[in-house]
Length: 351
Ligand SMILES: Cc1ncc(COP(=O)(O)O)c(C=O)c1O
Image (cartoon, rainbow, N blue to C red):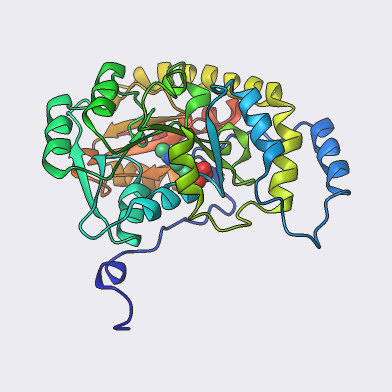
C-alpha cells in the first residue's frame, strides 16, 4: 500500500457507531420527525422529480430560498455542499498548498483536522483556555507565526458547546489576511451569529448546515460570503454535488422553516430542563451550552458511559478525544421522553 500517503494510513476512518435498538443521543440530531402533513407534501412533490436527469448544477432556486429564509446580505454569494463537511473539504482543496496551514482550535470539530490531512495541509490547533473560551493572545500569535491559509472556528463550538467571544473573533478576522470561516452548524440553538458581519470583511465567510435544524439526512450545507471568495471555491465543487432528491427536499422544506423553528425552540427548552436537572448532581461538572448538546465531566466517564449504554442509550464518550476532554461525555438534547430516560440512566450510573 505504498501508494497511500503515510499520513492517510495513520488515520482512522470517521467512526459512526451502530445505534441499532438504542436511543440515539450521540450525533446532535433533531429527535423530531416531519409532521404528517409535511411528509405528504414532500412525497407529492417527489412525483415530479426527474431522476433520469442530472441535478441543477447551480441550484439557484435553493440559493434564493436560503437568501430569504436566513435574511442574508443581498450581495452575499452562496455555495451549496453535500453537508457542510463537503464545504470544509472544498475550502481546504481550494487553499491547499505545500506547507500551507489550516488553523483551528483544540478541542473542536474533528473534521477540520482530518480534512487538512486529506488535502496535504498542516493542521495547527490553538489550545482553548481551561473553560474552553478562545485564548486571544494564543490565537493571534499563532496567526502571526503560521500565516494560515484558512482559519476554521465553530460558533458555537463542538464538542464544548460554547460560543467564543465576539470581539476576539473580530480580532482574528482582522489579524488574518487569508480566509476565516465561521462554522455556524449549531445556529438554531443560539442567538449569536456572525451572519450580520458578512460583507463587512473581505476574508469572512459563514458556513451553515440544515443538519442540526432537523434535516441531517438531507445533506445540505451552505457557505455565504463575498463573491470573490465563493466563486473561487465553487471551482473545486464537483458539478452535481447535491442530488435531485436533496434539492427537491430542501426547496419544499425550507418553505416550511417555521416547523423546524418550532422544533428547535422545543429543543432549546429541553436543553434548559436537562441542564437544570444535571446541575443538581454534585458528581457532574456541567458546561454552558449554546448548542443542542451538553458536555459533562464525570469521574470514571468510561464506566458511566458503559452503564448508560447498558440501559439502551448511546451518547458520545470523549474521554480519549483530547487531553482537555478527559472524563467528558457529550449528550445530544433529545425529546422529552428521551431526555427523561437519559437523566434516569445517568443518575443510576453514578456511584
Ligand atoms: C461544528 C460542525 N460543523 C460541521 C458539521 C457537519 O455537519 P454536516 O456535514 O452534517 O452539515 C458538524 C457535525 O457534527 C459540526 O459539529
